[in-house]
Length: 250
Length: 101
Length: 241
View (cartoon, rainbow over the protein chains, first blue to last red):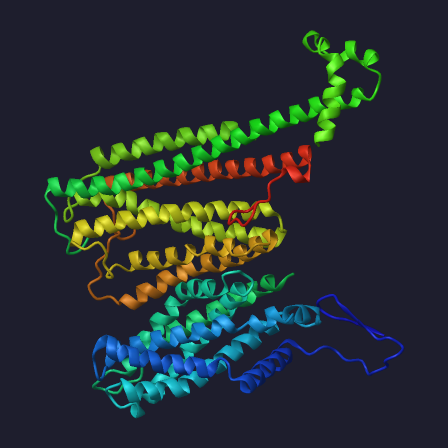
């Protein structure tokens, strides 16, 4: 009995292995499986996220000396936090597809009768999780080391803005990483490709965080910055979805 | 709509900037055309080299081919008068070339 | 090449329109009330910028053609167009910088959202050739470059919108004269200048395409006539081959 899959591949059953007819998992389910694999891998090896956290904390210390300031607030604080998170994310982006590339994961995935977009979703999801975990550690560290005004009342606004920024980082980071991993200058191409593409999202995130970290009135970030970041996330997600298949062809 | 908050410079200083901007444009254009010219020249040179090489190989093939047949039968048909005089040496010359290859 | 009469006509049109534009710029267009003579840079800076941006978008469209058809000629066209747009863009940026210096005394100003957006777009497209160069397999190089070109072309309008929104509406020091508000003679001069730069761009594109096609054809001819070993290996190259 054969079942024809949307990708035109057939799943035939040999007489030797009679199992009930299985259809391959849908895109979303595949993505979840792959995401689980990546998260489990990270939990076991703890390669990426601790390094990112360390990088952030060290960078905050460097900024203390570079700026010669004990506390910062407002847009300056927002800029330093956003830029540090951005560069820390580059560490994760550089490593995102390396395992697939070096251990044949790409080939294995291409052979499977699944929608290729699942890989995009899975990797972007993994990157998003890494960034959220990073911020769980980095933002309190930032509040401890550098931030002047207290963090507590500002947290809801901050979390919202950072989450939208993380989405942009996740989508664009995955896209750029998929390109960079196939090149020879992997660690160089990723950042130089990704940073210009991230500028609009960075604008929204940094300005949003700036209004969240303002000294006097504790305010929720202006809707404009959230809107810019959210819209950019959406548009880029659609773009990445449209072209990702071409990056995975043999 | 007019430009905002941009005071007019006196003509002699303004002229320098305007000239500068247009000169930048011209320089970029000239440099680009120069690079293109060099590339075209290189391509033409390679083309003529290719042509020469092809003719050489054709000539060599003609010499080698009939060199296997008896010389007296072949010579008058293909060779120009200058070469005919050198024909007795051709057999040894071509075998030298084959040995070299 | 069957391009003979077309290219010749194009060269002629380019020369004519460039001459006309220069004549109009310096002898016809009136002096701006605020900026005076310095405003003349506008007629070279803005057309270069516009043509460059259109070129980037065109490069993305040509790349779509490549991904859809799989034919390498689209990739070659995309490459040449992006390459030339980058050169035109850098020139526009330099001219804009000179204009900024003449207008406000600084070689760079952050206040003009168009100039800033333009810089970001150039920084992005400047990575196009390093990206190509770092991928050795020609077919993959072409494919990845096309994907990048499409995304980057889509990025152009997004970036301009985002930067403009970030500037707010407080004291914009705008270098470009607002859309459609140019007085008659200035508008005519601007349009002719724009036409001249656009024709120049197209002419140079055709030149470069012809040159590249000739090199590719030469290589192929060499391979056919003299055999595989006569052809020197290309090594790594950013250009389509």
